[in-house]
Length: 369
Image (cartoon, rainbow, N blue to C red):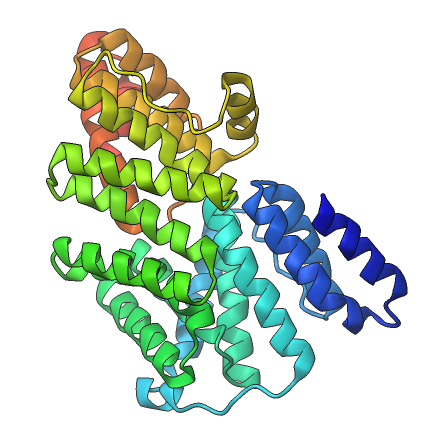
């Protein structure tokens, strides 16, 4: 609220639109942190339009795939050595556009994932046409993740490594945490998953040193998930999840806390079915409202309900959660290893429900998984 008051004061006395951009940028960031994702995205898209960077809105998945392929063909004309040493961006309006685009990326990961290819393609295009900025590393990290998500894993792996190299070129800790978080998701498809634990803790530490609490939260969240799926000691996983939730609560990273709390609840119930996990300041109605407005958080919430019911062989609870889970048709463009786990478990659940009901839709869902 205080940030809004200060922002309004600055905006009311600003002499030009350019004078307002830095304040608007921080306002958009604050909206992301508070899980007001739709408002953050709407404001970010408006600013980009004012900067002359309208975002093309595909009407179908086939159009989105065509956009990705167009960007892929564009980048293929540039060898990696040339990209790493490419000329720098000098146009101030394009530099600011890249900052807003990069801020939208992490917001979209936590909410409207379907827009990620549009924003990512725009970042790559601006980098190739107008030169590189530190934000270009974020664009190439998401671009590599997108390519891997549609089957071009080795090609995507090359671009996420390029993204990490660009971070070193610019010595930019401002973007390092987010680049590590997104790049590691693709790296985990090529290198042993256990290596991702070290990368995510490195990303968490690097982001903290730069004051980037968002990326520190994202890396901490992903570290906790990988620690479990890599077979870590359950008590240790619970301890780390509680540390992460407390960190996010203290820093008011509400969007990330919404995504991690259901996972912590699952871990607690796997250790002791009767134990009640800490709510970290949430009451039931408040959490329900926030989850209902955030598709990514809702998907994770219902996945964890489905998974814990599956593990305890609670068929009715599992089937009910599965119906809710499959009601959220979110494209997977990033966070690939987490999506892989969700796909595998949802496939097992679907085949179980099919055996009980003979409903062909569950067989098809299991087969797709």
